[in-house]
Length: 271
Ligand code: HEM
Image (cartoon, rainbow, N blue to C red; front, side, top):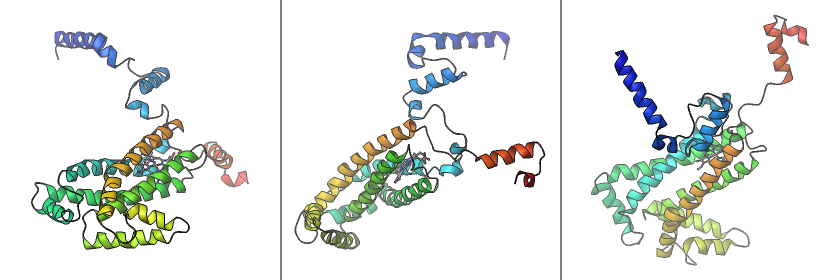
């Protein structure tokens, strides 16, 4: 590049970065000092979701396997594909089954979107369960993260309930009888069994039109709303708790062994 071109580019760059428009969006200069790095993180709506400092080890993909992130990604896929399905699905017992058949055979891209929704739903149950196991295995439920563990348990229940309520909507034999069995099981719960059953099915015996409407409403509004709010709390809490827990700091023995190794002392001499 010639000298004049470079000079012009530099001039254009400084004119842009010094303009009022640029400064109203990017309020801090290049983040090359710890203070500026913190200010940039806190002043940006997207970056502020992350803690200013994170443990390098906890950032390794093999530490979290991105299972929480994958669960969130699947939740987004389910929301988008679910809205598409809502255009064609009516929760009415005489048409629900036919609607699903039409989606998979007559609607443009209907089959792929329906299958994306089904597969993402199954996968989300798997990723959320594995994420929970990963958190437990790392002991990341311990203080100060115990509240986030409780939020996580709510998210786990919401995920299972979304799966359960969605199962009835195609109004096919497998869904109908699965929910009949599931809601009958609820009626055997002590004390509130009958009430829980009636709340779920909307009628004293069996599964019918009121059940379909209830499950539909819970599936498309109630549970996703609770899930989205709880996810916001979950992410905010991760940030407030200082990011990922990360592996525990090395024990005194490990530190001594490392020091001895650097000084060429045989490890056996430490015992
Ligand atoms: C919809 C379900 C969920 C989503 C979208 C979600 C999302 C996330 C994400 C993105 C992270 C940070 C990165 C990672 O660990 O992968 C995280 C961390 C965490 N999650 Fe979840 N999560 C969900 C369910 C759960 C469940 C079921 C539990 C436990 C019962 C849980 C407990 C935690 C805890 C304690 C942390 C902090 C872990 C640490 O500091 O190492 N989450 N979650």
